[in-house]
Image 1 (cartoon, rainbow, N blue to C red):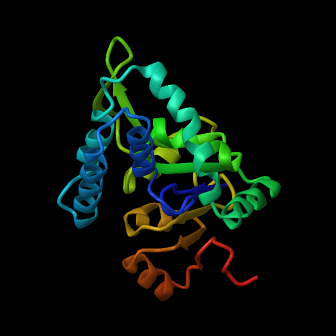
Image 2: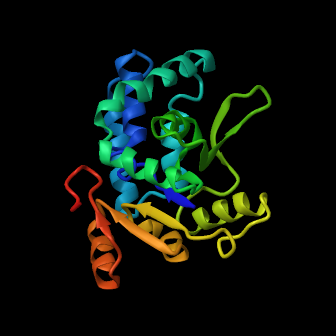
Length: 222
C-alpha cells in the first residue's frame, strides 16, 4: 500500500492556492482572496491558525457560489496544471501500481479540491478533510468529522482499511510519501516512510533516521 500526501508532495505546489487563483482568474473571487489565503497558510505554518480555521478560509470563500459553476471550473483545474506535475512523481505512483500496491492520496486538503488531482496519477482513492454541507447540499464552511491531519491521517487510513477487513499491520508493506513534519504520525506508522522535498524539520529527522529523501523532480539518483 502506497500513501501519498498531496500538496508539495505529489504536486510541487499548494492545491488550495491553485484553486483560489483559478477562481480569481475566472472572475468567481476578487483578487484579494489570493493574499488572504496566503496569509492564512503562513499563519497555519507558524502555528497561529489551526487546520479548521484554514479550511474555513478556503471553503467559506466559495460557500455561496452556485455548485454547478464551481464543478465546471474544478473540471478544468487540474488539466491546466498538468505541466507543473513532474514526470518523476507520476512514475513513482505508476511503479507502485505496477507492483500491485493500492495507491491512496491522504491529505488535509478539502476533498473537493483533492479529488480534482487524483486522476493525474491514476489514483482512485482519496482520504481527505470532508467539507460539511447543509440540507440543501451547500457547503457550510465547516468540517464533517475529523480533519485528515496529523494523527487524524492515521485514523482515516485505519477506517479505510477496516472497511476492507484489514489493518496497517495486516495490509502488507506500506509506504507514505510526505513533505511535512506535521505528517510524522503516519510516517512513523508505515514500513517505509519517504520524505519528499521535506521541510527543514522533516529533512533533519529523515537524515537522522536514515529515511529516503527524494525530490521527485527528475533529479533523484537513478
